[in-house]
Length: 219
Image 1 (tube, rainbow, N blue to C red):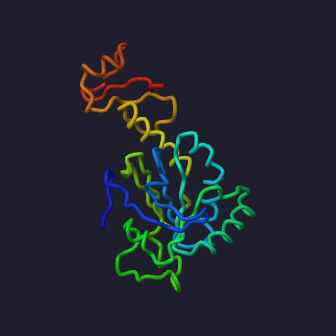
Image 2: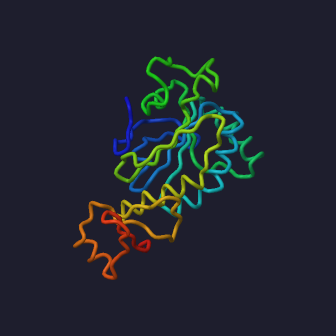
Image 3: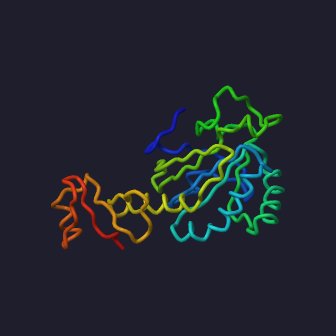
């Protein structure tokens, strides 16, 4: 099944390093980041999970939960978490899903349906496409996805910026321009009429083109 932005994120039951979860129930009324990895004890992913652990308080400020997934089992995740803490300096305080039967990565279109039913004997290269980040909203819909090759470490500062942008769009009906950072000007989305925009922004807006309406970032 191919997944796109605005599709409902597939629900699933899973065992994790923090016990069993039902994904949609676990998300609750907030946001979620689902971050996949091709295999435990891999070098690039070790650095990523450690850095993400250090950023966890920033995601929590934004009512966003973090969830990792690898096709290895939970017992491997627990051992890997110790390596991550020792080498990266951060305790992995978020759950890691065990997916040794490849069910969830297939649900999320990260491995093909004919990839088999076990992670046994599979190398990281066999699972190379399980390198995606999904940003999921309170409505359980996919708001954004990013997929990286195994050789390129993900930029979780950028993923945090992406979350900020998605949350602004959801709550304030604004879009963020190229290279936007927190506190910078934003763009009123085209779906908002000028009449409605005047109510929200009585001081008006900059309009360098008929279809661009620039305003300060709403609080």
